[in-house]
Image (cartoon, rainbow, N blue to C red; front, side, top):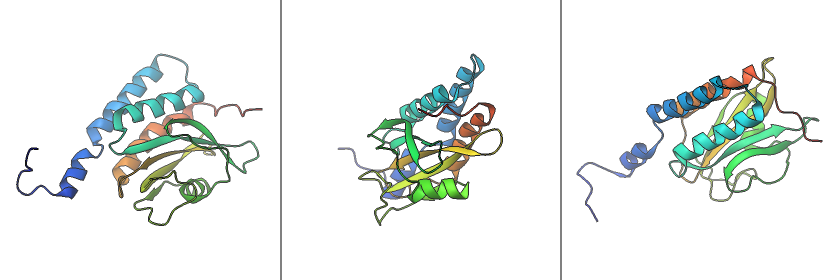
Length: 177
């Protein structure tokens, strides 16, 4: 096994594995190129976002990412497109998802030392962002989980907001009947 150069510690290694602005920019530009070529539809955009982010960041740091869509009655969040582990069934907004939904602002959980009933097993940190329509109404939340503590910060938030702002140009998906 190769020896680490002097001065490299665990924190330096963790930072090198984090998503960079360049990696987020690459994902963002690829999505924008796709979306310029055809009619924007929220269902397809959600799948494309999840797939692009998962392909770019799975394991570094994402252990799960996906959408939860607000039910027509506004009382629960229904799992939407996601990658890796199952997202579970529709549930009442709770934890970081509930706070992002009720507060209308991103939520970053740096160290989930106390288990949050909304977290998947093994999750140590997460980021959750509300998804807005053209009228400024929240119709979903996007979240990413990580098995590493403090995996997400304001840089991740800014890039994810930049990607999610495209939903303001499309209609939310039709509720399942």
